[in-house]
Image (cartoon, rainbow, N blue to C red; front, side, top):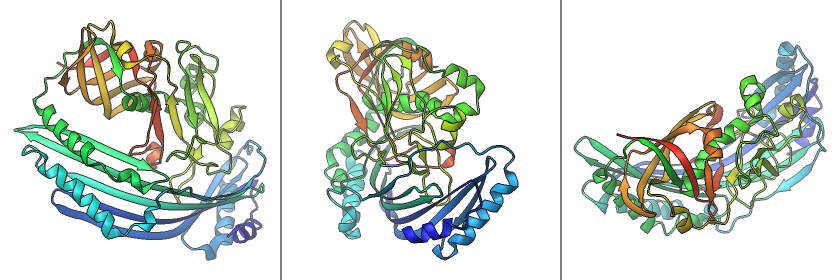
Length: 454
């Protein structure tokens, strides 16, 4: 493969050209209600050529390795037609790497019958959990992706990127009211992560039923404690995307708001994106432009200290590439994307965090949400009242809204229970979904959070 790529790139006439080839084996299993909705497996090989001339990009995609040279030439011709400026791509030391997967229990060694049996068992737990649970959705997927890359600067790599995913959802109904609860998990190393989930799935099913009878929350401004999952989603969605330099470069207003050196939080606030973190689903040795990944402090001790970059955004903004150019698959160009994004932990226990809150909210898990520039709205999957420093009754339909910069400044406590969440979803920027990412945080105590409700 290395020789094929090198030979094809010899025909490049652009200022810069690269080839990325994806080879992927995958399996999908899904239940909806009592019926099997999907059992399938597939293999494909394909890829993309990108070329840049005078600042203009040309792209050609392919499904056969026999046409590589033609695709390189086509991408170069397209780039020449649109380029009207100067090619600006940051220089990095070209690397040559071969990165095999680190598997503890390889899902490729498990038969599809065994996988189906496991998923069917989880589906049955949901359906039998309570009469109010009238249907179910349980989905399993595994993907073993091998990426081959080469560019005209001499970079070469091959990296194996496996992932296994389980997602279970229990919807409960009472008259016209519907509530749902989910449980999901993912891993880049271990099929065993999806096993032994019976108790968690049963608990989620019962929580969906309990939410049918739970009262709604009265709207207002409250001191709120976010659990690590909701706090992690908050930092990814409300702040992390603002740190992606392709967004910043195209948006002068947000570039001014995200100016490095600006104080946006207290001394304990540290926000990190780290593509080299352990062996998680968000971890890669290199990004999809051949740049090594690493640890980037976006906020250090409350001060904006970094942005996430590709080769192009780094050159245009006078920064160093951070290894955050990522593509979800064979036919799409890389975008500036997060990897493992998190708020670092502190020293406060959950019990200490509760002290002094007479009337507050403990918000757990993320149900959904949206952001618009620096404004956000998130829905908690479920929540509890906090009364006189104690966690109280379950409540439903809790939404949290505000300005991300004001909210970060209002963080009063960082828990000592940091967790990085590997869930079954992913990031969906630019329609490239689901890109494997993780997000994480400790419990966070935040004052003056606007809660939607009655």
